[in-house]
Image (cartoon, rainbow, N blue to C red; front, side, top):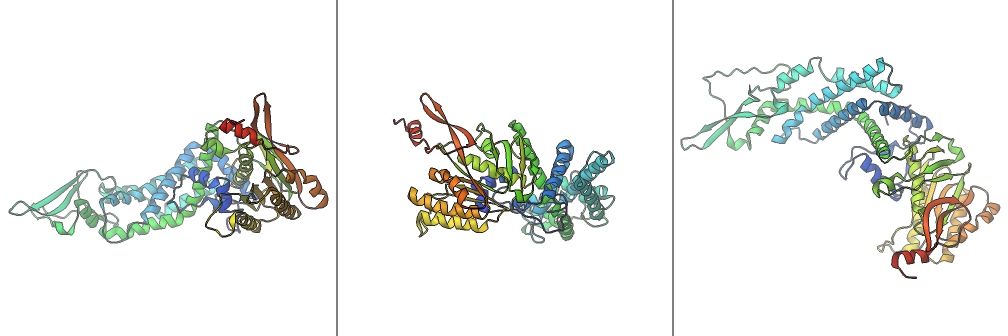
Length: 509
């Protein structure tokens, strides 16, 4: 992280650890990859490294986002710079020697594009600073950094010099090509004579353009067709061949100087895309009040799952939740298909977005930062393993608990299913007791109702976190029962209404 995302970028970052399993279980990986417009081949931008547990950095990022939200023209200028830097980055994959193809011609305009976009951003930030329109120290510093890079990377008359040296190459449209023929009218050689109706000049990056010294009566030095695949390749070889090293050095320097800015700016562009997405869906967002990590608090009013709203295009049912200070472990039971997993993901997603410094999906919130988010979800049995489903689940649980720290958030979704209900209850109580003694806080979704009903007994017998019961509320109707998708504190109902699900899905009973 650079100065745009951290108040003290030279200090050791207070990273919040979120495992790959948690990113996938909460569906955060696919959601945020889409927000950041990443694909399978994208490797330069890693948004996971921006998770932080430092409250100062979280407030610092909010101030930057506030300024950006108030100035869409600034956002557009930043977006243009990021696109240019991405293009420069792709140029690094081009070979520094050897053959060059017609598609490569446009890459040589990237330096002009870099100068134009960086100058525009520099001037815009300077104007906003002079009018006191930005309050974020990070954006003020961004203006200073961009100004210094423009001054050191480009000459004062760069625009004019580039147009003279490029000779129309940066906007290649029309070329005149001269051919020589033999006695049988076969083509023997070819050469570029004009570009964009201007005489071809043989230098692009030299300090002084090479003047055209050929006399009208002097024949052109035409290349053999055996040495060139297309006239465009001859153009690149003659026009750029002697200067290709200088081009790559210039492009590489710009990327090396500004790569750290690219990541930080991309981070904010992703945040703004997320905020716009929620506003288009008319869903509320809020910045939580940060609370001390030692409190292990999480309070949210009308919390919803933004991923469900985006991916499923479904109407969200908001819910409230408040963890008691000092650590609370909720056991969540209730009607099948009643929104328990969605609620679990809502809490984990909100915690993660909070620790990016972004507003979270609810109306009001106050949250303690955590050192990490650990998930333990039951998945389909892997038949390639030797241990069976129960052994597989226990290994997954052990791996998750090995990553836990006292102030981390634990989210379990039916973590044990590969054995009988009685053995499930025994194993779950043993693990839950250990989590309680260690002071963990989080949510455990299960259909083992005796686990939830024994909360009072466990609270009396063991120190540590408080164990409480949540239930997915079922709505009683004349023709049966249906899920309300409302989650509330309360004693377990000792039924998942499986018969109602069977009736609804199959018509039986």
